[in-house]
Every structure is written in C-alpha cells, then in structure tokens.
Length: 340
Image (tube, helix red, strand yellow):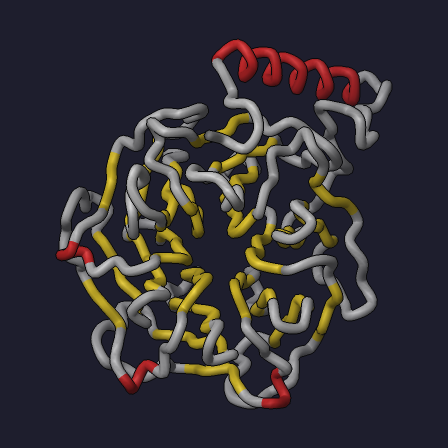
C-alpha cells in the first residue's frame, strides 16, 4: 500500500484550485500562508539556481539561496505530514519550475513520486503523486523530465513492481497510473539504476550502480532495448556510480559513492575510457557522495552524504582539490537540484 492516501482526480482538482486561489491572494497583496499547518504554501520568489537538497532521514527538502557559502543555512524547507515525503531520494525540476521527488517509502511495497508547485515551502500537499500497484513504482531512485514534461524514473525492487527499470510517465500523471513506457530486461544491462538525466535531444543517461557503468538509451528506446552506448571498465575508475548530470556541453558528471569521487566524462564517451577529469583525494573531503549538479558557470555541487555537507567545486576542478564551499545541511543528504 502507499504510504499516505492516494490522490484521486477530485483531490488533484481541489488542490489545483486551492493553489490558484493562493496565488491570486498573494497577487492581491494579502500574502500566501506559509505556516506549517497550511495545506498549500507558496514561498518567497526564489531566484534561479536556488539549491534544493533531499534529507532522507527527516523526510524533508532543504532549500538554500543561490551561490551558498560555507556559512549559509537553509532559507526554507518542504517538510511535514502533508507533503507525502517519506525517504526522499533524488529530485528534478521541469521547465515550469514544478519539483519532482522520488520517495523510497521505507517498509512498504510501493514507492512514490511526489510533485510540488513552483516555490512551494512548508507542510504543503503535493500538487500530484504517482504510485501504487498499477504504477510499477517500487523503489524509485533518480528522476528527470524531457522537454514535453514526460517523467523518467529509475526503479528497482522485487515483484510485483518492475525491477531494474526505467519507467516513463506522461506529463500530468497522478495516482496509480501505469507508465507509458518501460525500459527493462537482460539486454538493457540495467542493474540497480540510480541517477538519470536527459540531454536536449532526448537521449537518456543512466548510472548503473549495480554494475559500475553509465549507459545511454535513444529517445525512442522501449522494452528490452540495448543501450546505445555504455561506459565501463577499469580505465573509467567507476565503482558505484549514483547521481549524474549532463551539462550544457554534453559532459557527463557522476557522483561515485564507493570511490568517494566525482568523475567527468567527455560528451559522446563510450566504452572503457578514462574520465576527462576526476575530483578525488583527501583535500576534496569527498565521502560517499550521492548526487551532483552543475550551474551555468560550471560550478559543481555535490551532496557529500558521508559528512552531511554540500560541497561546491570551482569550474574546471580536477584532481585532489579543495572545495570552494562546504555547507552544512540537516539530516542525511541524497539528491541535489538547482532551480531553473
């Protein structure tokens, strides 16, 4: 069963109506309620590149302003019994600034993907939630969206859910809806897929934690499809790749949890190839990193799960280099995303 009530169509409509009313009141100068008891809460007008980090042990998302420093503290959070957050893992934004979060839902069969309205804070109801027996969502890990708003989720688990798979849901999905596409099977090479991202052409990039590879699939891949490319082998230095991001130049950045490193591969890399850059060593303070994000200036943000820090590395960082910022965040950190 789902942790928390499933969202029916009527619930979604009421929440969307409530959201619209909240925005109207705010525009009229009355202010949107942001108390922890409010079912809908609209936060301050966050500027782009605000930093969102999942806190899996406290079932919350910490929000930092842009360009945080080592002295920064969260300016807001999403958390509370209304949010549906339960073991939150990875997160991503769509083009309209809606936030999507994968939830492990410990102790249950089915996980959940929760969606939040732009600038939501506090103890808010999700705008929508995907999960339940019809959804095939078991232990969802990474999440990404394409240009049309379709939702891509890496998924692991055991029957009755779809194991080691990529699930694709159409934009606007909610409830126990089936995916419109499932990439899974022996030919795919998927083995505990974790991080996922898409480039501007729709190519799917996946970090396979279970077999230390990075794979790509074509935008039209479906079913038991072979990957278009695979990065793996001793030259890659990959041990346990987790979160990944494809930057604006096509480079693949991946947080390697077991290796305590961030590896960067060239655009189009395939096979047993060395990364073009590797951030690792005592000076980096990397310890069990889970996810990575990069801003438009090339700064690299890493959730350093082993120390409870968000580490920021300078553009072009390579080797045993110290972070430019080391930011304390509450709880156990997993995913990180920068707001559009």
